[in-house]
Image 1: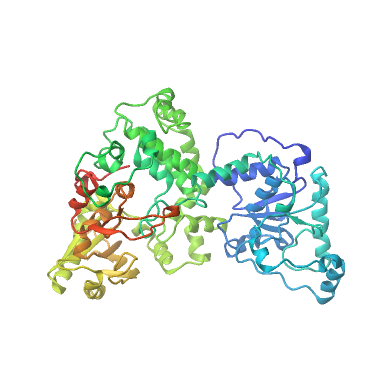
Image 2: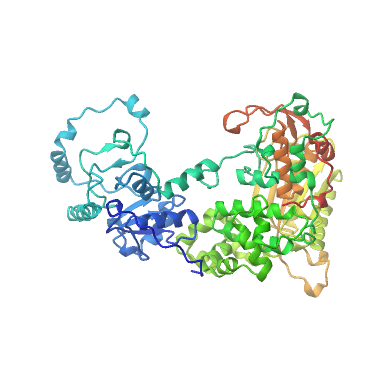
Length: 640
């Protein structure tokens, strides 16, 4: 692991509350890079647990909730006796700490998804268990209707909290040994008292003051965890939900006016743009726009660059708290007309907080030690490497790390890969090489030539960062449209013929994804995603520099009636799009890649009640006008 700032010493709980004494936990993943897991491990240690680095030394295996049994099976094989240990998810120690007692791990809420069920007990053992539980067998079962209403709660041991935690630990271990002697297969679970009762029937403990519980509660309340985040955008938006932290960045203001709910007016909802924009609207990033070199001219450009690198590192580990903090700080610095040099100056600005000291360190020393430590962290490097593979996201990258994979060769030889991931690995270098602007144009011209032969009335427009004027792009977005069309189904035959022809010619090399929709399709219409290779005859540079590089290409069908909205969406950038969509929502409208809709009603949880009435779809400038946003040319849409 890379170097890290020295942590504060553990604040051990009083002896009577060290419920994990004599127990040892092995975490999967067994690291504390993730801040939530780091806090969980710390709190467990403060309550007596020993955090062990080897699986065979553990009494309990604590598994990240995102992982399934299949994900951890390979790692469990490192210890032949793992089945004798307690296998639970990360909620188990949290509940133990919260209620200050060892809870029964043999409950469904602590199970790892996909864990094989233990073999059935022998008949003689079953009979013995009935004899041991004579009284319990005479209890009346609650009615099914009533039991369904009963909230699920952790089942706790009925031992008094004043009892020694060490005695509890000894009971757990001795119970486990007794089960082993009986020949029970599967996970050895501790025996609990027969008179166990649900938490709801136990005396309430109102002194839930531990830091871990507070942390989890804050995560649920603010939506900063990927487990508890709430969607604030359209559920049919292909770009995905807009989270709370992004809204604060997009509104670009610390004023309380931004947090005041906007009063919907029927006139605005119907798209009447007459009159002056309200003050809160002027604070949206889409109202300001920006060019691709605007950051270079900012007096805080160098500071922003380093903070952005630190943000990228936190993104690798899914650190939602710090991701939000850095986004807000960067957005604030971009609005400053003078260079911020000291921590005192930084603290006077909104949304800076503890990052103020880092800003001063960057300005004073031209470096950030925390960033250097993060860049040296081998685990972060591995996750960053895996995320460069086409078809791999955060969850998959972390699963592979948890399974013990460390290199691309590990994945090629041992991992279970889907088709796209295999392509991503085989052509890793090609697909991670940026495409020069001239080559983007040459690739598009090849498609246009073939398209003109099939149907000369079809128009092809290059979208993405190319349309914004970027010097290079990660892939090519080609928007296919035709006058007089009102649905993608009218363009689907053309797409099929185009793909077949380009494939036969060797231009298209492989299809990674294809979707053919109809007029009522809710999945973004028809599109084709795959790879292509530029012919040597079309290469814009010297022939000596040519080599057949695989490039990512997306061909998207857009009917003329939706072209304006699609151009906004497929031009970007992402921050500009999210800002203008949020603005539409604040005005009681809805903007997606098909059009701008008015009279949109939303119910509880921001869920759409109706689709709304189409206000505009074909004219890009008209959509800006209805929303009251000054027209921005594509090269003026570099934001964030």
